[in-house]
Picture (cartoon, rainbow, N blue to C red):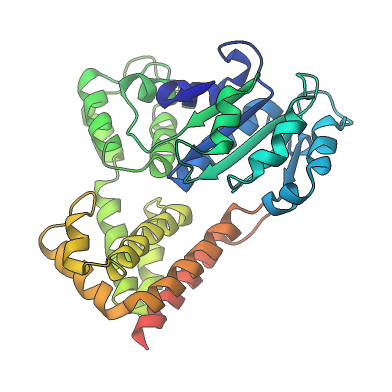
Length: 342
């Protein structure tokens, strides 16, 4: 079965209400790693009730070589009641051959199989397996902005049951169309916390101060400071952003987005100028000039190293356990700034 858009998001939030009956597994695929991670967390939390003891992670390379290990993980019985989940992240198309015979003998009493994959084509064997298999669901997740109904559902889930006035809902919808879902989630929680226990809808005059216009401008300045190679300015700017409520995850996501754009421009086969014409959203004026200058100054080799460093920091942030997230991100951005400063 194939689901996309709001239906795919609804399945991740309520997999027990899936059309066609209880599912035994789901493939989450799409081009946006951040959106895949967000929906994967929702799905796993809905199935396990947030109990990590009911979650088993398998590495995709090891799973490909050992189908019997996948079968054993799915059939294992836990010490605690409730549905178990077996998770395989970053799967490749070749995994379909290992999964197909295993899934034929799996039922609702066994663990739920959740698989995430980026960049699968329409002819992907892994997609066909989950689209056509009995009890399996393929969830196409694409970074489209949420519509009014999805925004209302997100606010309600966060605790703002009174909702927004039409003017406030329109303003939030416009912002949602310009920002990523990774940044939208914390904003929804912030709005719901501000209006906690409120009986009347939140109006535009109260919503506007909560919107991240000023914070986003400061965040853009931080990323510009890093890309321009000014390490001494990074720490003070992070301190100001933290005081204003911007978290280290948002800072890292902004840096990752910017440096991916720079790398795409630097390696464009027809040149940086032609690469800029394909950029979405398009860049104009000072931002356009800054991207050209930075892409030329960094060059492909250093930009590849920068993206590897950001990827490592992202993995550290997503790993379980306590860590000084702000210090980790600050150290990463300072190291980036020093790379081009040298």
